Length: 178
Ligand code: GDP
Image (cartoon, rainbow, N blue to C red; front, side):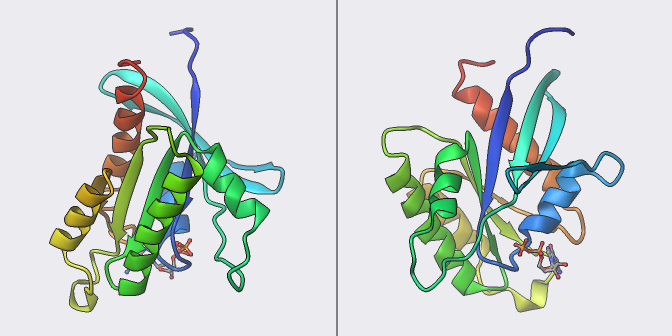
């Protein structure tokens, strides 16, 4: 098209082990996987065509767990640089669901006046017998936290494309349709 395409930074948040890296690897795609080392930060760039229009996302998978309650510079940077956030928990791990709520609160605190797109993601839906968090609980949490919600399975590649398309749509909604 030749038109100027903005690039949006999408930051993944969530407890270790919930599937952030697996989701981002699927986003990046096996063929076009392109690891950019920017200031020691793992980020994957890809242009998605959604509703007939192209948008480039830079997805950052750099979130680190809190060390002994310490406030880290890196964590506060992650909360500052995103144009959109994907907060991931595992439906098999109630603790990670509680962490997701805590992350939503931290994000609100860090970016008070801003209307940033946030998607709450319940991952690992393939592990049916190990489910600890119901779909209804996830949905209700998203209502309370005023964000979008989707359940995914990185293992089955279920709803992963839909997740990132949803991110693009949420970004566009806040940019006057572009
Ligand atoms: P991260 O620490 O949040 O980046 O999580 P990873 O992407 O490294 O995943 C942690 C573990 O969970 C790995 O063993 C993955 O293979 C596994 N995993 C990730 N997503 C899924 C999923 O949707 N279903 C299942 N069954 N396992 C998953």
